[in-house]
Image 1 (spheres, rainbow, N blue to C red):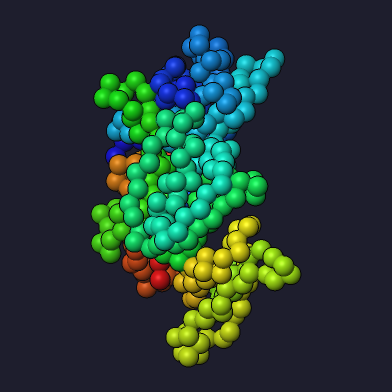
Image 2: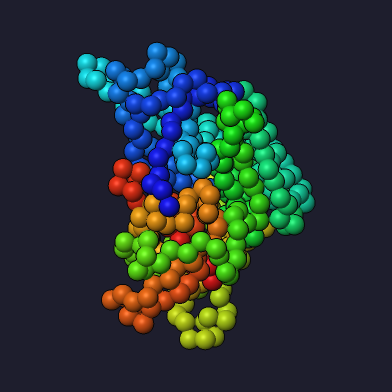
Length: 359
């Protein structure tokens, strides 16, 4: 495979239209996570910048988009938040992925009864579909109906609501992707995808990271720390009339019967929750994730030799890990895990997917 080269574009945030190609911009390491925002800082050499570089990088009004030159696929977008420059020859730009915008918009008061989780999230996002970035929704129902209430007086953002719903039992996953906005490739668009599962999940993935091969190093982190492992979970909500809303006790009965110890976890999933049904959904999901702890793989691979990010694999996809032998796994190991995050450093030719094994 060819080395990864990125073309950077400064774009109008409202329309997504390309204002300038920023050939003298060098972006820092890029990263993305399912259901969360990440940020990047890079430098623009002023002497090599186009004449309209200031308008194309104005904080609050523009976004920076990186496109893989070899494949033509947009792989990262960030809303420009900070620009720093002065007597030096370079200007530093800091941008955050579009998920951050949901934390700057408010849904107002909203109430739903027996409504699909995805439909609740779509309704909460309605205000962000106007007067903002070129954002559209791509939704798939979960089949799980919930009652949901959010009051404007709580000052909770759209992002807060999305995170709350996605953390419920069988809650949907979500991500905001950047795509070309027209056939002529003169602008970009943002698509918020909400679905039971993001990406291609399979037991036989086409993309495999191997050692020896593209993997330079790896680490496998197995954790039963607080917040990562528990066999008994209670979710707590807000206090009303001196009574604090509380879920029932959710226990991993099969694990306890099988000899596991009782590890208790109590947590508050979000502010403002007084509905015990919502809390039960949070507790059930937390127990499903934490029952046997977590297994996370961090693979540092040669980007030009690994399956190509954005073309061969993306966030949420299943990835194969094949290790012939290592001190940690002397007999070798073959497993499949999902890509919940990634980091790409073009300068060092390194791509680092973070993979979690689903129980």
